[in-house]
Amino acid sequence: MGFLEVDHDAFLVVMACVVALAAGFTGLSMTRALSTKSEIHKKALITLASVALGGGIWAMHFVAMLGLQLPILFYYDAAITLVSALTAILIVGAALIILHFAPRTTATISLAGGIVGVGVLGMHYIGMAGLELCRAVYSPLGVALSSLVAIGLCILAFWIAYGKRTNRNIFLGTLCFAIAVCSVHFLAMAGTKFVAMPSGTEFGPTMSNETLALGVIFFSFVIFGACLWVSVTYLIVPADAKPVPPEPEADQPSRLQIPCERDGGKIFIAPGEVAFVRADGHYTQVYTDQERLFCVWPITEATKRLLPTGFLQTHRSYLVNPDRVARFERTKDKGRCVFDGVDLPPAPVSRSKLKSIQDALASQLGATRAI
Image (cartoon, rainbow, N blue to C red; front, side, top):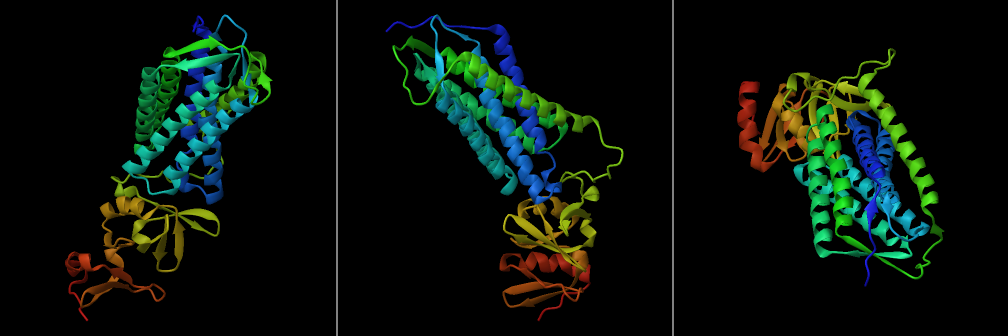
C-alpha cells in the first residue's frame, strides 16, 4: 500500500485556528446570564450558541482540510459533509441543554464538556469519511491521543467557562475550546495516512474543493459576524437601556437578587422579601407575602445562593427565610414552618432536619411552640 505525500497550507492552518477561537468566543458568550432571560429568549440563545459552537467545529475542520495538499485530485461527498456539520451542532446543543436546564453541578459541567469532546471527535471522523478518490488510514495512537485531548480539554474549557460566568473565565474557556478543537484535528491528522482510491463511494453527490470553500467562507462569515455582534455587548451598553442588576456570586449575599418572572417580564426580588422557596421540577417557585413567582434557578442553585443569606433548608425541596416564620409546629416526627401571610401555605420540615430547624428557630422566635 503506497501512502501519498501530505502537506498543509500554513495560512489556512492559521485561519482554521482563528475560526475556532471566534466560534468558541461567540458560543460561550451567547449563553451569559441566561438566568435573567425569558424562557423563549433563553431557548433561542441556546440554539444560536449550538450553531456557533458546533458550526465552528465544522468550519475549523474544513478550513484546515482546504489547506490539505495531496499529489492527487480529490473531492468530498456532500451528504456526508452535511451530516458531519449536523452532528457537531446537535451534540453541542445537547451539552448546552444539560448545562442550562439541569442543576449545574461539577458532574453536569463535566458531562457537558465530555459530550462536546465526543462531538468534536465525531465531526472530525465523519468529515474525513466524506473524502472521495482517496482514503484516510488512521493509527491507533493518533485516534487515542486525539480522543483524550478532545474530551479532556473540552471538560476543562467548560469547567473554566461555567465555573464562574465572568468575562475572564469566558475568555479562558474560549482559548481552551479552540485548543481542543485544533488539537484534535491536527493530532489526528498527524497520525493519518492517505491512499489513492480508483473510484468514490457515491453515497451522495460529489463536491470539489472550490464548492466546499464557498460553503466554508459563508459559514465563517456568519460566525465572525456573530462574534463581532457578541463582542459589542462587552463594550457598549445602550443609553436608553435600564440597568439590570448583575447576577451576583454565591459569596456576595448582600448584593443577591433573585431573578423571577411576573406577567412575562423579568423582575428581581431581594431575599428579605421572600418567605420561602419551593422546588418545581428543574425550576423553583418563590413565595412572598403577596404572590408566588416563577424562578429559573433550580433548587440546588437557590440553595447555594440563599443559605449564605440566612435561609434554612427545611426539606430537600424547601428553603425558608427564618425572619418570616411566625411559628414552628411539630407533631411527633413531622414539623412545619407557619408564616403570617394569609395565603402562604406552611413549609414542611423533614424528619432528619427537625432538631436543627427547631434549634435554629428557637432564638428567632424566642420560644418554640410544639403541638
